[in-house]
Amino acid sequence: MLPESRRPAIEPADVFDNRPGDYLQHSDDEIEGFKARLNERLAPVGSQFTGEGVNEDWEVGDTLAQWWRPNFETFMYPFLPGHVTRPKECKKLYFLQLPKKKVLSVPKNMKLLAVPLFELYDNTARYGPQLSAIPHLLSRYNFEFVDENDNVVAVTPGHQASNGVHPKSKVLAGGEDTANGQDIGMDEFAPGDQE
Image (cartoon, rainbow, N blue to C red; front, top):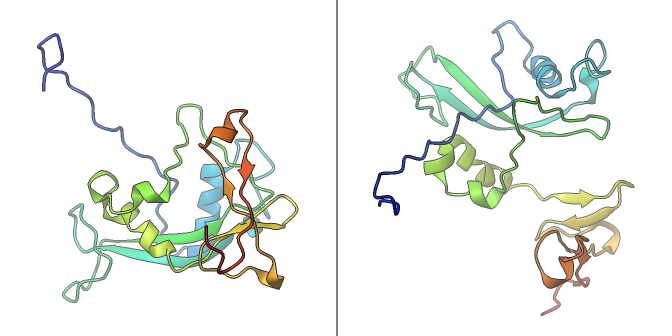
């Protein structure tokens, strides 16, 4: 397709994504090394988040996936092929939560891009097989959304709220009542209610 000027328009491809990750040496403890890299990459420069005793705040959860690079090609497998005795790389994806006391810091020459899970889902062409698998990997979890007072505000579908409480669902964008920029709450739905 040509624009109105009848000259081909070249749109540059997306610039390299810089995800907060790093390599560890074989002698490094995996979880402690991961926490140290998180503090180096995501903490504000010159803040109280650098130095001794800051690693305890990170809550590193389950290992969601392991991707193996059997040789020096770019493709990685979600399993270690049987014929490979010395893989070149193992990339791990962890489940972690940002603690309340932590602050994310983005360098001035970069920008933080939040990608919704529905865009990652089945979008291997744009995000690659590792990132597009994240919705599948997270589907085994039920998430609770809490406010600043640790009250459960919403839960993901299929999860029963504790103590018989039925949290409200919140619409965070869209709708005619969001013109003033405020979030709107929907009516509570008890299990079995129909719209």
